[in-house]
Length: 308
Image (cartoon, rainbow, N blue to C red):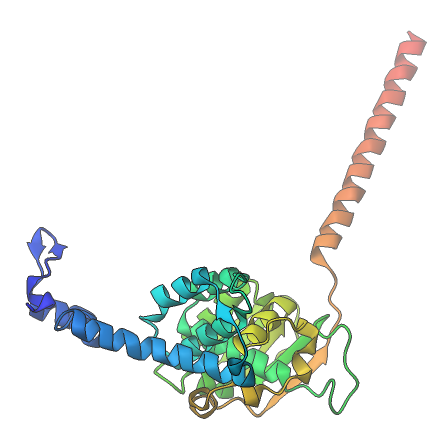
């Protein structure tokens, strides 16, 4: 079979890229085009193998019971998973695949979650894993009574250097890439929009939060916890139960050994005023003042008409 990199023509400024140019452009990723379909299938199979192994690990003893996965879910995992090399990304795909297993294979409820993680970078997924692993380690439901409204005002404070170490354990990154991952999770609704990040010369803050130099302050929420539980293979658990699950039993060794979670972190419940409600109340007040002014003008006009 002809070498795909030799025969592949990519128009670049009116010219065709050579094999050497493509190797420089793509780096090791050029292996996907390397020596034809044989190597592509081999590399894709390795990537999918990590996802399927993670799914089997999460299904555990249920694997021997009758069940199947929705073809729509399998197609989504198959199409994207062939190119997934990052361990944490494979873990999330495996968890959602495990959650999709049902007796008749008709459950395609994980499709929205699959679509979500497809839009997320590996850095965003890594940060998501780190944050919600810390939330899962909180004592509620174990040393302390279960917290019925766990995420109402929940704030966690992490030492930024430890967060950076956890984020960069599988590759090079810096403080700005961590901050971009925070913004990404906020934009996707997987963290609340109140945050603070302080590391080195980089200081970013949104909302009124207590923060010291060298700290990261984040506000987890139910949506983020729900995705985390499904990444572990828990399909039907409420997000408030996150502190009662044993995460270690549902993670592959590659994830547990590959990411060192921050040790120095704190949590608190801080009540925040609802900005939307405040704006609504302010608008009502303004509308009321306008209505009063209109009534005064109408009364004044009536008085003038009567006088005339």
